[in-house]
Length: 118
Image (cartoon, rainbow, N blue to C red; front, side):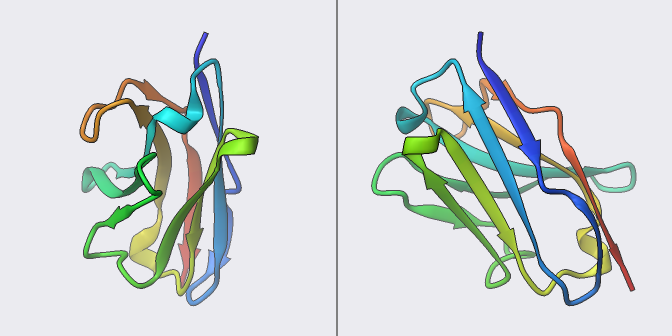
């Protein structure tokens, strides 16, 4: 059974940092893209970024580029989303999703809330 579990969310002031983790089990982690999304009632689901299993290349949405960094530790079956210089508009529930193909989200985590106060 494949499971993805996000952690590390919380309340932070604008300008602060958080690191989210996406711990996985039940899949060959090193062969999967790991994607990060966020969701709010107002904006719906928004792509944040992804890390490839091929040379760990990354992609980011323009809204987070330069502030967020995605990494992975294949030995721990875990991916990370380092979020710096957070803004109130980054407030959302953050989800990780895994897929064997670049734009294919096969498995999702339950999400973790990030709240950025102004």
